[in-house]
Image (cartoon, rainbow, N blue to C red; front, side):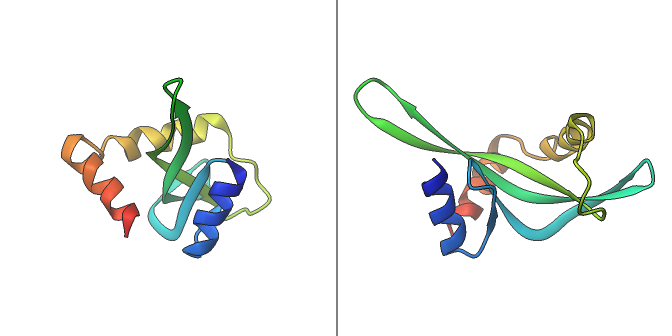
Length: 104
């Protein structure tokens, strides 16, 4: 999976974690929590699944949270709080639009 993530991210000059997440550098929203500003970035999570005969590469909408404090490890609680509002914007047809946006 790391090779696929690295290849796809590098080819489009996108940030990635070399594991399963690729994200855009543009900030889609900012939020201040406990006097720290967090930026949210559109992302896509990659996964490989199989039906026993074939393998499939799946793309799922996700997000990446960064902070003005670059050395800070962002807690799970902060990610969950930001994720609730982020995913609330992605419903049925918007889900498809989100994925189409990643194809270009």
